[in-house]
Image 1: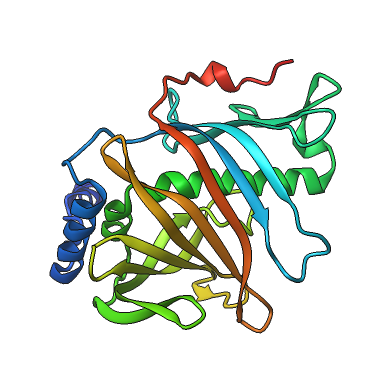
Image 2: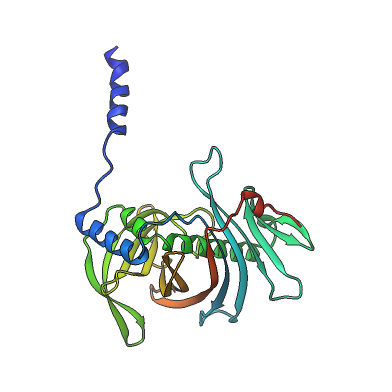
Length: 285
């Protein structure tokens, strides 16, 4: 009987172990960020939005530069029986004579081809890569609306330190900075499941606003220093009682580890918490 009960008792004790407390300096920083980004107090969680995303490709090494305008609707959906939310997305790109319509429903990514819905995974890989980058962009945007939650979710956080964040040539901003790991984070440079990452989070000392996140993927517990990306949050304005960044700058690290500007994304007239259903993302004509 003792042999049978011992594993059971150990499992019960393990389940009752308290979640590690957030360090005092990190909790203080999270509260400052919460007050800055929710100036009128707590609000309902944002799980959906509509907006127009103007994505400007700025990489100097890219063969050509372009701007694409996407009319987007997005929903983080936790369906029956699911333990992890599924990102649902639908967007239209009207830059060509034939509008491009892509999305992700509960069955996976899709695209309309001559008016017929097709699995995007079975089409041109470049189209799938582009869609996954746009999907990750939308997922990041949703995460940036709750930066205090990201701070409290850090695993193995270091102490809060001070550092200058360079935002332009000859211009830097004093920041409170904390580093740690996140179990899953959407990276623009990686499709598929969200990646385990090591992050540095930059908070403006003067305002308590989140200014930047630098995320480096973890591979077998080690940082891949040539695959990281930094996101700068600009033009933050109050909308629906919370701060919303209306411009995102993405910088990618190259093979030498040097940051280079890759994209600028402008949000046009974002609408938070629209009434969206899972059916709104079904592939259809």
